Length: 311
Image (cartoon, rainbow, N blue to C red; front, side, top):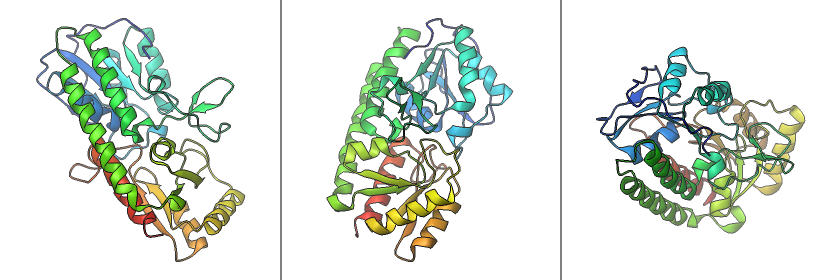
């Protein structure tokens, strides 16, 4: 949703931040800031060389607990458009984004605009408010169809910022790639039997994936939709019992979080379970299988299929 309609001067230069940025040829003179590496990749695929894109968060950082530098705050204030996830994901940026809106910067929070789902555990932190029905799940990017929707909407918002440039053609091309990736993922996951489509994950990040591809999240190491909670010994014991009862062969951890607790749970279960790392809150390092949004989605599917397809 648009949180403000004013636009700052298109000639303002975005301050260079240590998180790294990608400069294009500034064909349209537009300066865009994306909060996460995932959103940064989506934005770059839509704008190409027609805008300068800066990403606030470095690769490998958990969005749930990221804190911006003063240079990055300045970049947000000078942007023509800020693309954020919303729904409580970037808790450390909430005040900065609020201030930017107050000062006339256009901030588009993507999450509320792509049919967000409810978190299962509505009492825990890590999601955006949704009235009486609970918290909304911010992890929409793990569903390529919602990503395609986001790409189309981004083109519309960019057209408002710079109406003389054609943003739609590239957005539609990238949308086609995301839809093709979805079909590829469906094919990859066919090796997982219906009765084996049970996920135990580090935290409640795979709800969109589960809904899209017919899986169920039956347990998490960290309760709730964020990575900031600390599970109790009773909660970990209950998770061990669930894994044993359901004969789950894998615990899926994340590249942005330590897997110490997951490995402790696996040790309690025994030798018939493995710990498998997935991409969640950040792209992988350049040159890795997950260094693009599509790459991370397809790689996750392969790793899930390999871990659960043999059960």
